[in-house]
Image (cartoon, rainbow, N blue to C red; front, side, top):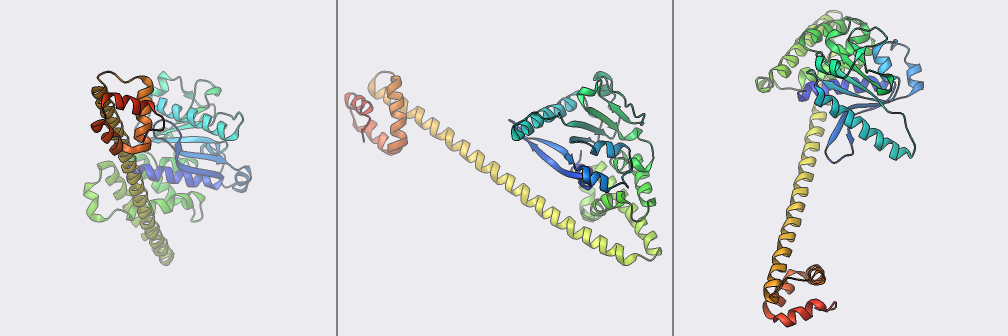
Length: 344
């Protein structure tokens, strides 16, 4: 997904799961390469009971047990599904190592704006037993995986947050539905701060340079928010909305600064890693060259013991001293020097 749309999806889902438990975005999965789970959540039964306003339905089902959520703006294919499963199994292994006991496999929710026909067909997904349109279950309960096709979800209150993450037509309808909810609706508390932020965090002069999908979404959200604000002003709540907008702008600026600092730190770590690798490679080349010079001086290949001794001398006496020995010692003296563990 494009960066801002991706972040909007993760932030809205995370803030929903935070209502009923613990949740994080961009959870790093230890592995040989960088892998990150879009949203990882762990429910708190007490918080679930404390929020009866979250009616039984798709979101409450997603929040009922620990699981990962992967969001796709385009329909994922087989490779993307395998990637999600790899992350899940690696993360499950990491959790079991931390807990030092066996744990239930986390649930996996694949949320797609469009219908992933190939994945649904080739991996045996079927309509979920709940009968909800747009919700598909894996071929057997043991797989603990569901696919959510946003474009097929019914236009009801229980799906409004998910529909905000859909394609333009679905998203526009969801924005209208969100605006029509009561002023104290929990869905508005979750989504509004991020929608307001998205409306104002991109300067006007930068809009033409955005990818078309991201630019259209920003413009749609800005237009929607302006219309929403106008209606609220007419209802006599202008001051409160202005305060919310200013707060969202401040939060957007702080978040942008935090993201810039994070990217700078990551770039610094990468540069240091590359420098360290270059240093090790240079040292290895120098050792190979020194060994070759020893062999030329001796007129024969180094023995295994001599190779080990040469490495020890380079580490203990440094390259300058070893170079002096190579340049000034005869072949016999060099062989004796290598054989002496206390040579200087």
